[in-house]
Image (tube, rainbow, N blue to C red; front, side):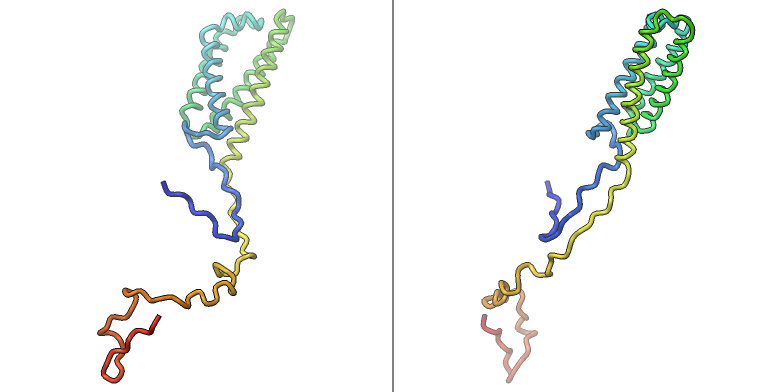
Length: 202
């Protein structure tokens, strides 16, 4: 495997560019790993809402809204699958942020009137708020990862244009012998007094 060339001696290279955005299911950046985790969480929560809407509504004191909870569950599963399968999960994480806002608004309606399960409802709202913070952090990080990196800069002030100091190079070619394949062929050499001029001695 070929290695990337290193900057010439005396150069100060800029830091390597940041990733240019999500790179699909093989991505390993922190924000993309968080997005995948949120995708699995979304699928798990959506399945719970789809399979046990009555239990959830009874726990929260919001009986009669089972159909709405199942609709939210379908939304969660679809969003989670899209996050896991998408090359760039950023728009789907934004969708999760919008869904979180809708969930909080729905939970807020449960505090109206005398709800005997208001404590459970408060815990659920706090959990949704915490997940919302994670969604916002994730989508902001993914958006920042896609911004173009600053162009590199090199410092040439310490360069002289020579591989070594002039004093060290003086006389370095004194014993140099011209290779045979670098010499002028005999028929093309200049002639003097009817004979080809011989090579200069090394």
